[in-house]
Image 1 (cartoon, rainbow, N blue to C red):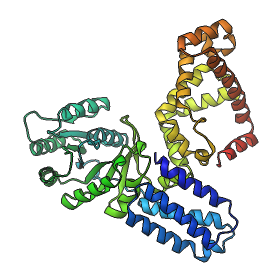
Image 2: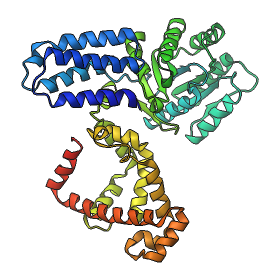
Image 3: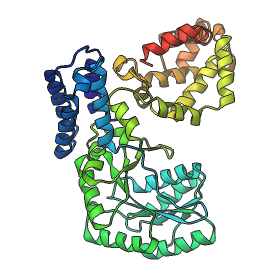
Image 4: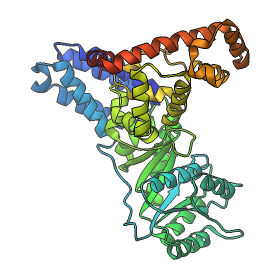
Length: 442
């Protein structure tokens, strides 16, 4: 995500980090590079000017020019200004207590991902201990109600829907049903249009009056850049919004919408959609995203993803296997599954400090991982548990079964043996662990 701007700004940060002296010319040149990077990322011009002026003003102070570590001080200023640009701090949903019904009204243009986001948000709130219900109030788009029903079933969340009704009636009856059946959170999926029009706005205004929502959230497509910012402004002026969810954030290479929204509209980004799966919705933390953009990683989110994916007892068992070199290809295959649950390889690399600049595209090879998975799946259970029995004839059979050349099978087995011995050494040697971590800038 945000690859284009991240690559440029991370490069600027790497150049600054080693400087023992910072001059006014360094500051001006660096800020000009940042300005170009932000404009190319489709960030609002007014926002760019404010960012540049504030950065220059603060960087010219004695805190940088006369600092013992001027490069690091300058980087901190850039980071802090980037955090401010994104919204300063995490803005949570303002919902009522668990014994009172809260309503979340979702709105946006057609194709922004409202219906999918409704299910994602429902699942996120369910994990937090709330009892959500989805409301199918999009009666314009064909199959929208059915799509929400299917998504609701996939996350085991009830969907309220009616045939031959109006959105207003659906919402009114959904509220009564929710209160009667002790739901504490309603997430209303409303109809969108291809563009902002008065009929759509009037309908949403009526629904808002009916449900008195705790949150009015605009779902906007991150890839639409400044159009998303303009749409947010229109919805806020006409209906009133309390925050934004940026969908398709994982596909956004530029970042114009994310970097402009808070400054232009004054409304916080609350969540970002990071993939197509129903659990691919993340709370928006400005500081964490700023660190990712500047190539500093995001260890906190990485650890959170790992904690949600890896069972503590399983992790302890895995560590013992690594220490005793009894880690097998079957265990290796299991890690592929866990890794997939955490997200794409590229997104995980972004969270490791220093890794984005240290690794090339050749080092990040999702297709290579798929081939390795196919090779292991073509092995028998005995072969997965003891790779040393895999001789030439077995290797040919495995290659044929996985649709890969024999040399790929050989490469995997060699890589696995090397990795197994390396991990055994790493789990037993504290100094070696420190050396490995230092290679990633930790």
